[in-house]
Amino acid sequence: MTPVTAVAFDPTASWRLNEQVSLRDESFGALAYHHGTRRLVFLKSRELVELVRRVSAFESLDAALDELVSADERDRYLTALTSLARSEIICGR
Image (tube, rainbow, N blue to C red):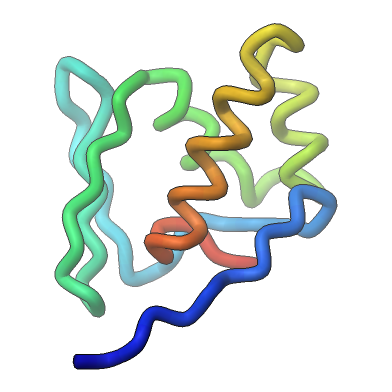
């Protein structure tokens, strides 16, 4: 079994959707399938899907959150994105 590598998650860095990941839109949000790890991850809101798709257009994750997420939802999305980074759904640019 391959050990899981910890991902250093820095919201001040620039991020992107991993090129090994396919997103499939669903009524609840999307399914993210990582072709390398064969991991399937559920993105449970359309807003999170939009953020993941557009994050590479911003100089940092913080900038993307400032633009696309309300201040009262920021912590929730930051937690979700941290998990997506650990799952290698998003990765540093």
